[in-house]
Image 1 (tube, rainbow, N blue to C red):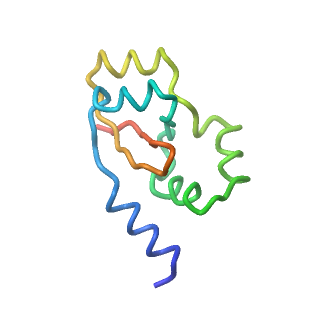
Image 2: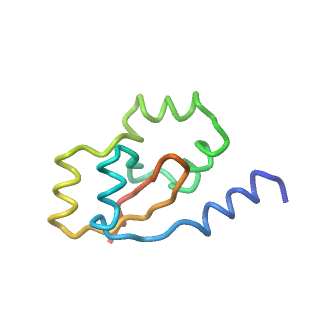
Length: 99
C-alpha cells in the first residue's frame, strides 16, 4: 500500500457527518471550505493534505471549492443541514449530504 493510499484511508476514516450548527465556530473563523457536489470530499482533502497547490487553486478558481458565504451559512442553519466533514488543518472541508 502506497503512502497516498494510507493517507486516503486515514482521511476517509476521519470523515464524519455533522450538523451545520456544530460547525459555526469554524465558519466564524473563516476556516470552512465547501466542496461542491460531484467532487469526492476525500480526494479533495487528499489534494490539500499533499499540498497540490496548483490543483487546489484550480478548484478554487472554478468554484468547485470555495469559502462558505454568509447567505449559505444562514440557509444551512435554518435548514438544520447535515454535512460530510473532514479536517485538513487549518481548514474544515464540508460537503452537503445528498438525500
